[in-house]
Length: 439
Image (cartoon, rainbow, N blue to C red):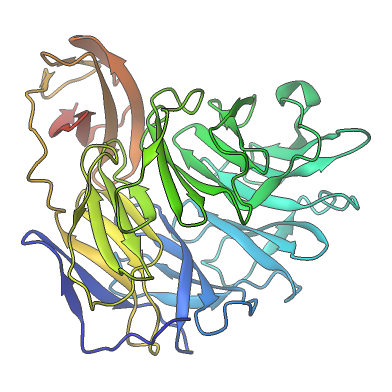
């Protein structure tokens, strides 16, 4: 299925401003790919591995960096049963992360936590997902304390989605009441790892083409019908991505037909859909913007970028380069893209160095004042009705994300710690980053 990457290509350049720089993921065997990359901050990243030579082999492995990728340390996700598949990983810092695991035949499964950087893993909420109808799907933590797990519906009749919430890092879990969740449709179920989260908002997708969403860290949920009939069948599937709690997209696959949809209200309604014009189809937003990066591990391999929310695409790399897999971005200058390991010291992942070429993005004149500020700031911009705001600290962590309306907005920042912050402002193809000092 894949070729081994040659170590001759240490740097793959695709713009005058940015390039993918190869880093070694530390696996002892060749051809370890990465199915998922999760960025905590500019220094801390975790990734889940798969066997790139025999993709049906089930492996329980991860890799992690705490210094921006200068050193990656690979390890085993020991959940006590090597037959379990890993659904997803959700880290909160360099030592603490959770994974979901399930039996690909029997379902069930559960959630496991590490607090020592992956050296050991302990099962949490062991009494859950033991019903004969249980099937664990995803786990997500919003911070070190608040987390949610989601599994398929269980119980009599249509049952209810089996979901649990914790507010103490997983020490105790509480089943979500039926009133907090929309009822499942007949025969409806979720998907392993089939979710997306940003800030306090999380979405998961189902085989009926529905999207479940929470805006309050899993306390309450609503459900919306997407344009798809299914998010994971052989004939109709789709990937769901968001850049803010409001702005998102779906890339739909129906055989060799690809359709692109967008939403501006968090998935409640979707655009009519247009033929997807890009040549690469593994998509990730630059958080808080309308810029989408697309990669591909199959022909044509490489990287593409859209600065207008998927309307048009620019291919940034020539043909004949190394494969590009799953990707993730912290901001316009920090991101990683999956590759395949050659040996512990060679290859496995690419890091973005420099800034993505967004030369065709229109700069607008957002004004943020006063600067420095103590408790409130005013954001002013002309000729823009709505715009997205994402505030990040110096580590790259998103500390606030909002959709704002009107020409002038006063924003309360009194809860932010003293220090420097980047206000990432975007409206359509207009993007601006303003550095603000908080007193």
